[in-house]
Length: 200
Image 1 (cartoon, rainbow, N blue to C red):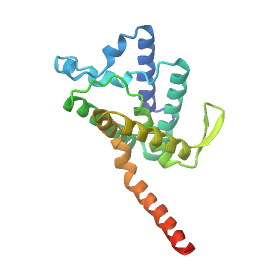
Image 2 (image 1 turned 90 degrees about the horizontal axis):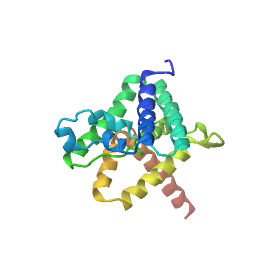
Image 3 (image 1 turned 135 degrees about the horizontal axis):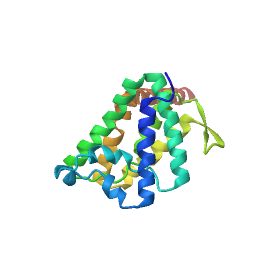
Image 4 (image 1 turned 30 degrees about the vertical axis):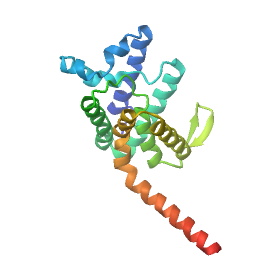
């Protein structure tokens, strides 16, 4: 598959364009955000434009994040194909939109959305090394554990509505990889328990 795929361009361009708009005038966040009340009033474009909300307001961080996002989406597409990758992404998008309307929750930032893609790539290629900040070689699995630790921190410290939003955003990862991860943890526990019994 050509690495310059349609899906990769789709996920790179909106956030980059949104960043330029917001940097030119912060009021653009309000124009791009998914606000259920405004969608019901006829501003249907918000069902799509919220995906263009910038991942950060730091130019260097945006460049790094978009490059990394492009990299992991290509990895996933090469393994799964465009259809399955798109389905994986759509689960998160549809659940975020549904959550927004059910709880009347405006979505004004999607900084965690790209990590659902990273976690998928880390689950598929845990031993692959990446150059963190283009300098430090780190295996994908360690970055994934760090991401999950930060997710757990937010889940514990945020409000109940934000916790439910996190569940909606990351549901695609748990649906695709949750059973395998639970099975792996059970195997680790059984091995630990067996070793503990043998030491007695």
